[in-house]
Structures are given as structure tokens and as C-alpha cells.
Image 1 (cartoon, helix red, strand yellow):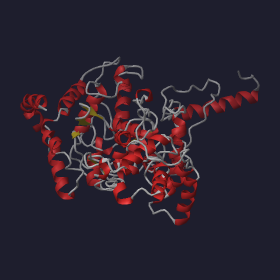
Image 2 (image 1 turned 90 degrees about the vertical axis):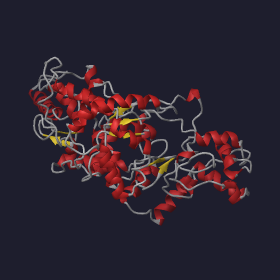
Image 3 (image 1 turned 180 degrees about the vertical axis):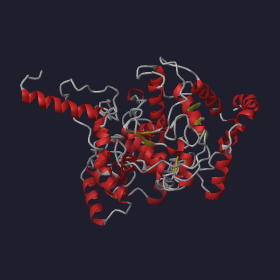
Length: 242
Length: 280
């Protein structure tokens, strides 16, 4: 409710006029009318005066393009999926530069990633390779948008086959290196198991700004699921090593 | 497979007159020429889909769209024939390949879908609450039929979205910044999948945004998707990408949507549109 003093009336009229002007170019279909009191939403900025990166950020988080309130399977919201953490920000800068990552930045990313790694209590012990095979094959999980993955129907998979060749009986992608013969080629020393666990848990700990997801650090797979996938990689009986 | 072949026969006979009415090259001929020039694994990955192209189910959807374009409909009982897609009211030839673009009458950068919806509202009187506006996806929606028809009028023509108005540049450049923005549960950006040549997700070869001869097929929508048995739009493709990237739901005609489409159309500049396309 606006007090009917001369100054307040001028302020209200000016604010309404500004909103009326802005409202004509807003993405909504309800035009503002000059007579209405000032509304709480901020005026849309001039997109032509913003840098591409600033505008992109505005579009993602402030333009109403996404359903930021959409619930996620992990109990957060769409906004949380889109607000970048430090590794995402650094790696986005690298991607936008069009250049290879420099050593200093790489070292920083590696250090950030190493700090996130949580090892299984009781040590790294290979799990069940048959379960690991199913986890590696399944691309189910964490999708929301127009078709929400219902995690009560089954655990999310790791989708490893999307990017990697693994067993000879299935077609894997080539965005990542082939893992065929993984255990056969490397053996199962404690150092090799530790390295493999760390790569899966947070691959930036060795490959700064890799395209590979942070399977453990972002909660895509549980620790036990990672140990099952490792069995699929290392067990001599696994198709990966046949 | 057999069902599709049986359905294709009467369609092929019925289309004999239909396709000859369109002056341009058949989409499969455009594809074959690009494949020969580029030697791209992406372009030739499905001989089955290539064989189906002359009998593309999208042609039926296009025919429906042509009827809707000329039909008096909506509260204002008007046709869409005065709709201006940037080249003048009712000018459809070459209009689609010059989108997205800035429109002075709305002050916005608009793609095919958002501009069509604008015309359905202003010329025909539909509102956001009407199913004709709300339902965007599937062979049976007005929007899909009309878009398929309108886009078809640009088949074989080179992608050429204007880049003169500051807002056109702003959306295109924001789209590029978005292309490289890593986010979501899996830290994906568009570049994760679309900056290699011959890169594969499982058995599917991916198009490289930096290779215009591949990228033109990537963005040639509306296209019939065999895996979904429906013609799909550009905005539907963006939505499906974001879904796999574990991003939240995106609104039709939104700024992010237009920005992505602005950037991806600019990336195919100069290469011929393949319309209607047929994809996995």
C-alpha cells in the first residue's frame, strides 16, 4: 500500500513506468500497467551490455529458463544441480579458453580432488564382478527434467559403457580410454587398487578437468558399488579380462 | 520393420506427387553429398535410416502442417498465412534457416517454435492456456505439424541466421558460453560429447560442433526419430540433451533454449539444412 504523499507518488509512478517499459520485453505474457504499484521482481538487465559469460550465468539462474525448484533424487533442487562448485568453475574457464589446462591450474584441481576422496572402512577389497558388470552397463539414475528417474525402482548405475570399452561382449563408447583387459594388464597390487579407486571416486585427482564424472565424490555410486565395478575391472573371471 | 515397410509402400506412392512439388533436392541427396565430401563417420552411421529417408513418416506430418497453415482457426478465426518469420508476412521459403533472429515487433530473439507460437496467439487468438499452444511434442500436436511444414520450405538451403542486431549476438555468444558450462551431477557440458570427430557414446557416433558438415545434420530438426516413433523439434532435442546431462527441466521458448539454438545454428552456418531428417 503506497502512502499518498507527493514524493512517494512520483517514486511509485517512476518505478511502475520503468517496469512497464521492461515488462514489454519480458518473457512473460502479462503486461505491467502503469497504474499498479511497484512489484517485487527486479527489472531485466540489458542483455546487450553484459559479457557472454555474465549473460549465460544470468540466463541459467535468474531468467526463469529452468525449473530451479524441481526436486532432485538426492533431496536438493534443480538450482543445486546448476550452481557450479569450484572444480566446475575452474574447468569451465579452461573449456572456454580453448587451450590446454596449464600446470598451475592442473595442480590446484588435483589437490582439490584428492581432498575429497573417502576410502572404504576396512580397506579397498574387490566386490562382486557380476554386480559390477550391471552397474557399468546401466545408465539409469539422476535424470530429472521431463522424465524423472525413480530411484525406488532400482539403484543408479555408473554408465561406464557410455564412454569406455570394457567387456568384449558389449559395445562401449570411445570418449574415454578402452578398459579392455584392465586387470590382466595391470595386476592387482595394493597401489593399483588404490589408484583405480581414486580415479573412479574423483578422476580429477589424476586428470585435472577430465570429462569423466566424479563417480564417488558426487554420489553417483556408493563405495560398495565402486568396489563391485573394480571387481569387474580386475577379477580374472570377469569378461573384461577374457 | 515389416510393418514399417508395408506402411511405406502406399506412402511412397502417395508422396510421388507431393515431393515433386518441392523445388529443392531430396534430403537424402543432400546427406549423400555431405557424406561424400566430408567422409564423416557420423553422417553414414545408419544405412537403415538412410534407406528410410524417401519414406520418412515426417512427410505425413508436413502435409498436416500445410493444411493447418491455411486453415481459419482459433478465437479470431484466421489463418497463419500472414505470419512473419523475418522475411515478410507469409514468406516461408528460406525463413527457417534465418532463425533464430531478432524481431522488432516483440523486441526479442525468437526461434521457429517461439515465433510460430507468437503468431498463433496474435493472429489466431490462442492463449498460453490453450492445448494448441501448450502441447509442443509429438506427431499429433499442431505446433509439430506446423513447424515441420515451415522448416521443410528451407530444405537444402544454407543455415544463415542474422547476426547484425546486438541481441542476436548476445544470445549467440551466451549460447556459446553455455555450451562450455560444466554443471549437474556428472559435470557435463555440451562439449563433453560434441567436440570430437568420430567420438562415440556406446555405438552412436557423435557430431562435432566444430565440423559444420556434420553439425548441419545434428541440428536438422524437425526430424523423425525412429527410437521414439515421433517427429521431434529442436527444442525437444535440447530438452533431451539436458535430461541426459542431469540438468533440471527447461521451459519452452526460454532464454537458455534460444541461446543454445542461436549458437548451434551459427555453428552450422553455410551448410545445407537436411529437412525433414530421419534419426535414430
